[in-house]
Image 1 (spheres, rainbow over the protein chains, first blue to last red):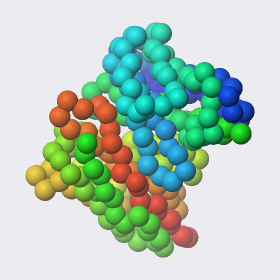
Image 2: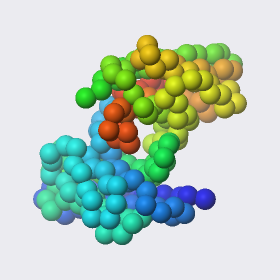
Image 3: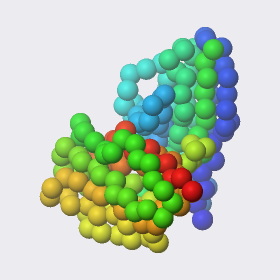
Length: 110
Length: 110
C-alpha cells in the first residue's frame, strides 16, 4: 500500500535561518507531488507541484523553493526564513484520483 | 481561478444529529474532493466526487456539476466527526492542482 512520510512534525526556527522539509512517498511510482501551506485560519494554499523528477511549478511567488531530486522525494526549502513563513506545511501525492496528505509540519518562525 | 465557497462556516451538533455541508464553485470542474481535518491536523480524503453520488458508511456526497455545487451529508454524527471539512476543486488543465474552500468547522457534542 502507498504511504507518505513527512518530517519533522514541528519546527521552531529563528528569522533568517534556512529551512528544509522533506516528504517521501512509498508504494507507488511517478506520483504527482504537492506542497501546501495552511496559515492561521483554515484555507490551504498550493505552493508547489511536481509531475516528475526535476519538474517543479510554483504557484505563489515567495521566499520558498522546492526540489524533487528523486521520483518519490519532494523537498521544501528556504535560504532565509521570514516571520510570514510560519504555518502548517502539508505534502500530498496523487496519481489518478484522490489526494493523500502527509501528517504535516508545523513551522514557527521566531 | 476557480472560487470555492463552503457553508456553513461553523456547525455545532449534538451526537446523533444529521447535517449537510455545502460547497459552491464558480466554474466547471473535473476534480472535486472532500476532506476531513482532525484536531491534530491530519487531512483525510473522504470522497473523490467530480459528479454523481457516493456513500461510505454514515457519510455520503453528491455533486451536481451542471449547477456547480456539492453536498456532504453526515448522518448520526459522532464526537469523532468533529474537525474541519474541506471541499477542494480543480478544472480544465489544472486537474491535480486543487483549490480549497475555507472549510466548515464541525463540533459534535456528546
